[in-house]
Amino acid sequence: MDATNAEIACFEAGIKFGSLYHQFAGTPVSPESAPSLARAMEEAIENQPHCRSVTVDVREDALAAACQHGYTEMTGEFVEVEIVVDHDGCEVVTRMEMEDGYPRMRVVSVDR
Image (tube, rainbow, N blue to C red; front, side, top):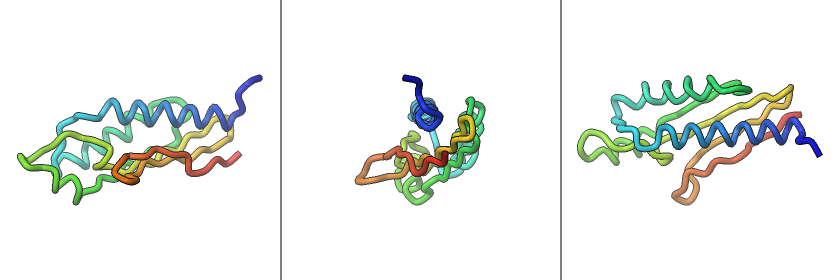
């Protein structure tokens, strides 16, 4: 059985989140450098096939509180991310947000 466009779009979104999270986790970040890192994250993932848009919002208060020496390492607790994927007309909206202390990635909607 072949995968549906919705299944492929969801899979593509998962690939993009895996790439985003593991490519940038551990990157040194400060409140001053966070906006440029967020843009770099967006632009890097938007290069991937079927990616319509990526929005990375920095959780500025959480980041500032973690910067004891002027910077810290990027983790999922400091960003909220939305990735929109389109595969052959099927749009999938996905998000990563903190949930119970964990950066949860989930499918928000599938528009066939």
